[in-house]
Image (cartoon, rainbow, N blue to C red; front, top):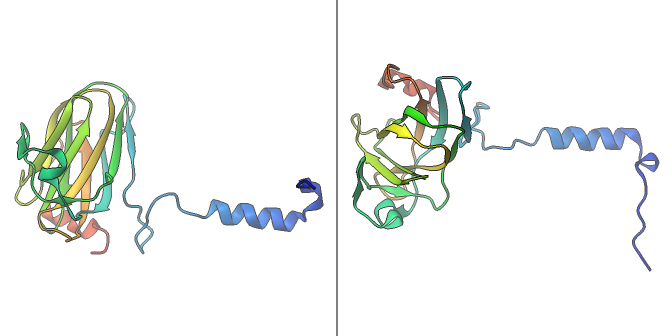
Length: 180
C-alpha cells in the first residue's frame, strides 16, 4: 500500500487561490502593532542607499562580557546583556572605507558586532547610546543590541551609514521607535 498523489487539476481553483493568499500574507520578520518591521537584516553594496535605519528591541539575559570572553575591545567596553541570537545580520558586498552603526534608544543600550576580523563592543558612545565607526571588510556581520541591565528590553533605532558627514541620531527621533 503506497501513498497516492493527486494532481492540482482535481483541487478546486478557489482552494488553491486561498492557500496561496494565506501563505503570501505571513510576515517573514517580526512586526510591531503599527506594522513596522523589526529585527531586519541588511545587505549593502556600491549602489545601496548611503544611510539605512532598522528597528528592534534590545536586551537579554546573557552577559555580553561573558559571551565575547573579554571586558573590552578597541571600540569600547563589552557591557550589558544580550540574547543568544543576533538582532540583525549585515552583509557587506565590498570594502567600506567608512561605515557607522549607531543606536538610538530612550534607555541605556550596548552594542556587539562580530564578523570578518573579530568582535567589537561599545557602550555610551553618545550619552547612553552605543556606536561603532570605521573601515569595514566585506562579509557578514552579526549585530547584537543589548541592554545595560539584565532582562530589560527597550526599543531602538539602528542607523547604518556610509556617509561620514551624516548627522548624529537625535533624541527627537525617539518618536520613530517601536512601542513608543
